[in-house]
Length: 238
Image 1 (cartoon, one colour):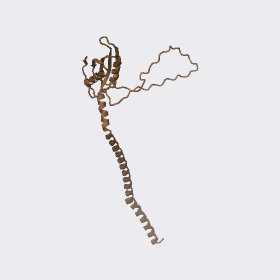
Image 2 (cartoon, one colour):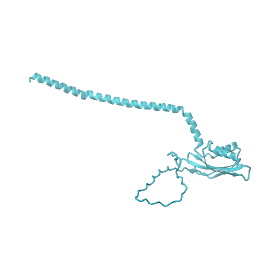
Image 3 (cartoon, one colour):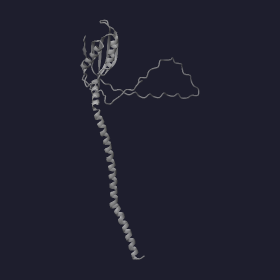
Image 4 (cartoon, rainbow, N blue to C red):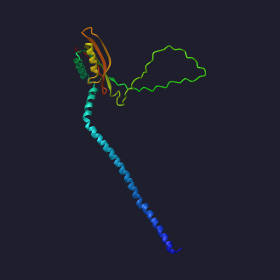
């Protein structure tokens, strides 16, 4: 092989090496940078789309803000931040007057801290009897009435935001006098009034001192924040 051919082959190899080095040193980094820029652009576009969606939701929520504020105000009146017993008693007198009744006595006892509720545990599966070659007859048992499950019914609603430190119940008892039907209407009114009132007891009987019936309603009003202990307050009005 002559020198000219060797020089040609060497020059060709050198060109290949130069091109390869140029690719590695100059072109490939640019391609990597372009790929990274594309990925970053896609990420920014995704973030912008999420931000735009969040902004649209905020605009919708802002339009509904007056309605939400009205709802919050109603809830704050239903379960206020303090006991507000005088305001609730005024509400009771208004309900009694609407139904032609006379409040003869009312009592507000000490506030009770909220007691957390533990969800009912899942019932254990009933044991299965093991098979035997010769079954033994079981002794006869007298039939008994079925026993209701302790946690039957709808499971309680539990929130981690409601604790004994920020939620309390105040026992209230109110006595009224008047026609029996009006007393029932008063009972309904206490449960549908502005202040949340959970009825825990009700009794009525013919009055021995006045015309009509005497009725007594017991229940609980609720406070959002744990109030200070209050001495029992009793008032009698006729």
